[in-house]
Image 1: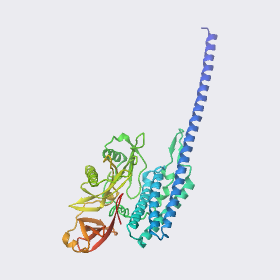
Image 2 (image 1 turned 90 degrees about the vertical axis):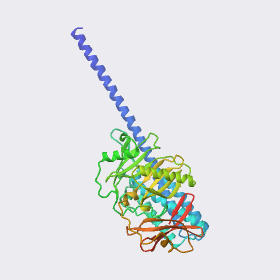
Image 3 (image 1 turned 30 degrees about the horizontal axis):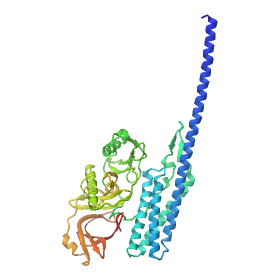
Image 4 (image 1 turned 60 degrees about the vertical axis):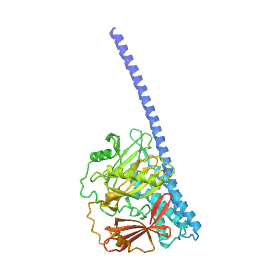
Length: 455
């Protein structure tokens, strides 16, 4: 090949090279445009979906507020029952909407718990009226407190919705869709403002967390690294650390690292919260498909309680005793209290969610235990069980008795004899101070198809 032919060949190669490069650039541009358009379309779809969810949530809260306000002016038992049962139904729908929103359990937990407590409380009141009791002033005061809190929640949500609508998903530099940071979207104000949720004893005596305390179980424990927390989470779940994804940290009274074990179907996803001090498990929740509510018989309940007690013992919670249970969506939610020398320690409660059909533990809430558990020296009793029983009203039928440590409003603890008694077909819990014989507390037990409620 002579020099002229070589030159023509080189020119041709360059020419076709430029053409090929131009084609590639055009193709890349088209691909980028198409990808960007697809991502933008996905972003818009996600945002529209969540907008609808928040609008539905606000609508549900409006309906709840209307129903709560009606309770203040009702004058007949029939209307009380209808309205209370309607609120119970509405809270179930509202919880379903909450579960569909782009907010982690870290932020949503308190609101969801409040909605649950509201529904359970109204259900209990409905049962109370149906059994012939009357709505008294203390009930109306509690309803007013529920309404005031609901108004506060509604106003905060409405304000943030108007500010943040359409910002739940965004495009990254690579053209993909991600969720906006939690601090940039809804519910951040509810978390920051520490909304004052009213306290309701609804699923067993002394079942609410005392968040005003310093967590005793992890007091003095060293801070752990994220890697150490991840190992603790993997060991608790019995999984490989590689399966766990780091989520946003839990802030507040008990700070935690949060991890998630994800499945392709989402059902089966597990979230676990590990305390930054001491690497203890605060909560664990598994996403499951809700099933029809089943009420276990006595034998089945004993089996579920045995499964729960063994689970807690294997995971380092020591000796426990089942106290009260509730049933919904195919789950038995069982309260376990730590025990010491045969004394039930009500401050140290652990709530377990156990699937009734499979007898698998799918959730744990150890907030009370983390807040209260410590090495205790229980004081000596001055009264015998029989001496304490003699203090009771003689018209009562005693059906259960034991020693129990109960929390007081001033954050102290009181060793008492707990008597389960019956009067005219109604069950009560009466607590007699084991030191001085004082009658320190009386709780009424309401038995429902969903378990036992105490107030």
